[in-house]
Image (cartoon, rainbow, N blue to C red; front, side, top):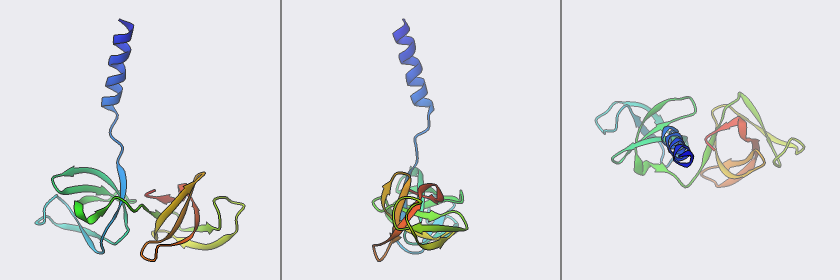
Amino acid sequence: MKNTFFLTVTWLIILMVPAWASTASIGQDKVNVRKAPSLKSEVIFQAHLGYPVELEKTKGKWVQIKDWQDNTGWVYSPLINKKIQTAVVMPEQVNVRKGPGLNYPVVTQVESGEVYKIFNEKRGWVKVGYYVENQGLGWIRKDLVWGE
């Protein structure tokens, strides 16, 4: 009886917990984000190449996305790149360091809203760089970016 009860409770918990959204990036430049999953639907904003998004749900060949400012909309799924992870800088100004830690020297500073490709993760830090050039820049604390 106890085993059945615990098994039932476990399954209920699993079924009640929402599936975690996965992250991806926009795969082309100037992609229209629409109010509904249709080419006839209103364009609510445009997302640029590499822009990080959370994939919320799908409907046919469309995917509902959410960005770092909680804007949501629909994108035609072939325009999403699930292989390249990117992140957007959240605070007004962030130090980029030579290595993954505060003891490494600052190599530059980046601004809120700037988007970078993620090359690596280590101990709460992400190695970021330029998307198109595929060139590393340095390390940023993971809690200072969105999209990883």
